[in-house]
Length: 209
Image (cartoon, rainbow, N blue to C red; front, side):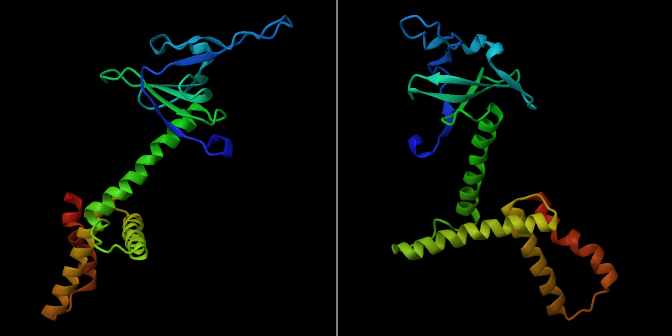
């Protein structure tokens, strides 16, 4: 896969075996110089080989290392969380060793946005409710469900409210009910008064959601 310019960004276990690349230069003598300068001890990381990045919580270091399990060099991001965490460090890597540590961590974290889409699709957009076995119908249903989630995100952004599918549903429901009450009761509200109260009324339950 990597040979076809596809790369993997994932996370290592904390006890993974990684090595520092050697800094030894060729001497012109017989034999190849050593490949590695020793196994990495993350409890005592050699900071002279790392590049430090500014992060809000903890410390982040990036370096190029050799992964024994993958049999290749990778770009590694080592994150040491703030005090109070049970885990001492977290290791993120990319098989594209030209990436820096911050890019590796940022790309890894974006995958949660995909998981949030599927979570919202299951909870609010009925992505698992299709009972058809036809591939085309399932494809249409999945796309329609995820499109509804994206439209809800766009609506929240346009309305200036915090993104939440539940809040968005409450917002739309309240707006419909308020217009329905006005229509059924046949009243003609004062525009100046209703403009002040309309947004507060339709956001009433959305704020608590």
